[in-house]
Length: 83
Image (tube, rainbow, N blue to C red; front, side):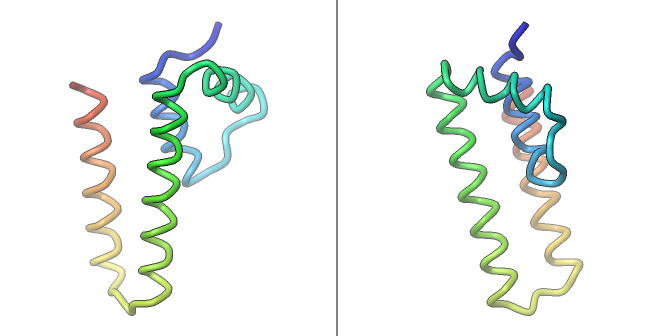
């Protein structure tokens, strides 16, 4: 059975930190083939992640600042999915 949109959003976020297992990645990919909204969300979090990484490379932010940004992003993601 394919994962729901909420599950796919969670898995895409998790995939930023650690690659998904082969079976789960395959289920997510099949869902993405069929769901335009999740594809757009996946692109959005990829752009956000790359932006944060590029800022990190350009700026000498303290580990505390980086952690605060990452935590804020995750909190927003959780709130969005709980709605």
